[in-house]
Image (tube, rainbow, N blue to C red; front, side):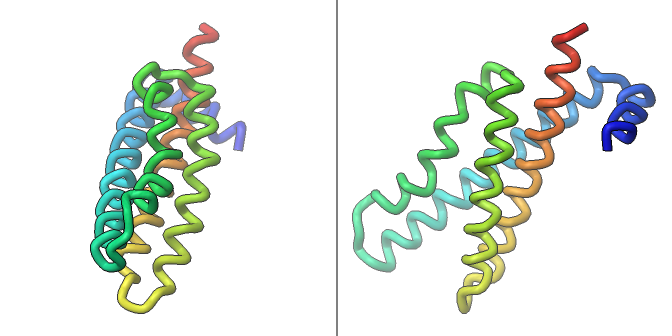
Length: 130
């Protein structure tokens, strides 16, 4: 895997790879955030509950917003780990009757976020070492 990334870096350059991975982080992050807010509001209206289910779903993602805005590679590495929790949640939601599309969208968004944040953490930290 290391050799693959080194070939990729030599072929495309760190700046271009860092920009592409940053773009995928932003797309994955905000799409996952939108899906979680939509799912939280539908859960709230279906059961007449408070905003607690929405906050429980969204708050872990919002904690990483300063790291994303500050372009910190370590925060992106931790975000990659947290995105796997949303992947598992999406798989669980996809197994519910009538929720397959919503669950698969959450799985897709979390995978984009995982790959983007993992690559961004690598490329940005290597870029900072130069």
